[in-house]
Image 1: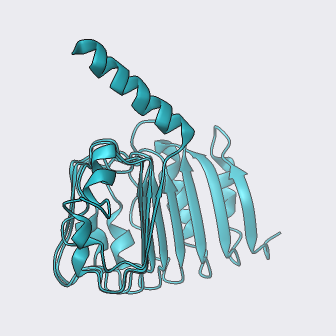
Image 2: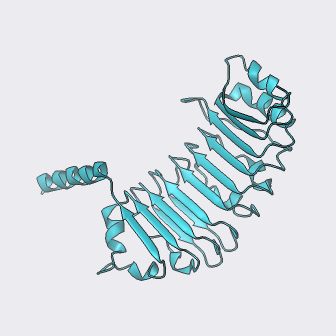
Length: 254
């Protein structure tokens, strides 16, 4: 067992015994663990410290648990993929020091501070996903010089986000951008016209005002995405029905 390299899914017991035993798996390359609570974090970090070859780490915070904080993890120099699911008190500061990280996914984190400032200088990051209320702020700001190698960005189910700013010099390598169910974002990200390497723009279940603003005929912001070879706009049947209900309510009010 001590030579085990991959654990598909590990559910933490109430006493956290399984976490303390994890440290014996020094050859582990891939770990997916669920049911993490505040009282488990110290033991988890201590066990992970023993895993000198870990490349993929996925952590699920126990559903409904209060925001937790992960102490510093100093032994993750080999980590390439990190997936965090669940409420966090704050974005762990050690993430920004992961030199070999290529993929980062944040889900349900409920962060109130813009996480981009901490993530923008990760040198080899290629894929970033911020989803399912991972961020509860109103603005995301991609600053000049940030995310130099990022190729794919996914933003979805961010219910308070109403504006995205992309400065000149940010995201110079981005090839694919996905925006999905961001109900308060009614305009295309400011500065998207500067993303010269953008090849694909996927838009799904976005506000009708957003879609109208980039329409090829009459859309006031269409010029900002004219350089993108492939623009896909999709609306699910559920979203269409929701729009119809909202329109019906407006009609009744009038």
